[in-house]
Image 1 (cartoon, helix red, strand yellow):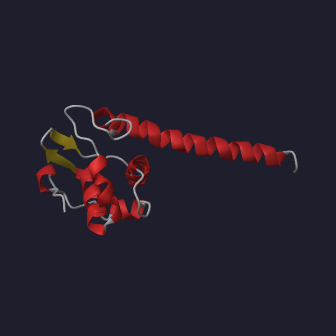
Image 2 (spheres, rainbow, N blue to C red):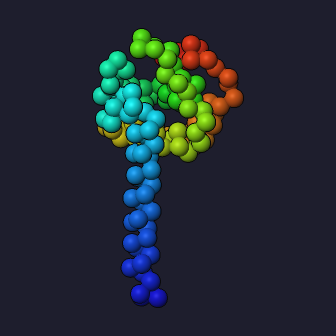
Image 3 (spheres, rainbow, N blue to C red):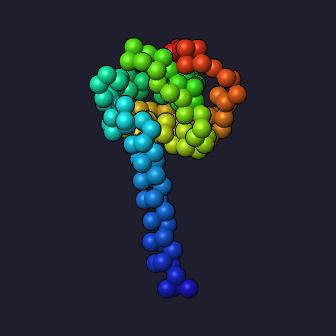
Length: 129
């Protein structure tokens, strides 16, 4: 049994690293293409630095969930929605954004994302509070 403890420890570390790399990879594939690795924006697409305050309010959190689910029409064009991703993946992306911005607030949960599903909104209907 004593020999198994180090193995279990290293496996747990590996799974944690894989999970962290997973959300960073998902961020790179879905968000960073337009918004940058650090949410700084990639011209002509906007920086996300201004959404930090939204992460701490119920209305702002709901808005961000709707944006990632249904997309958003903005000055730079149309941001697609990512409703094809699982609730866990979208919550992880929003939590990654929160960490990148150093924003305060509770972590997003899959249940919070699920509440936004089924509304069948268009990107034009998603409005910032």
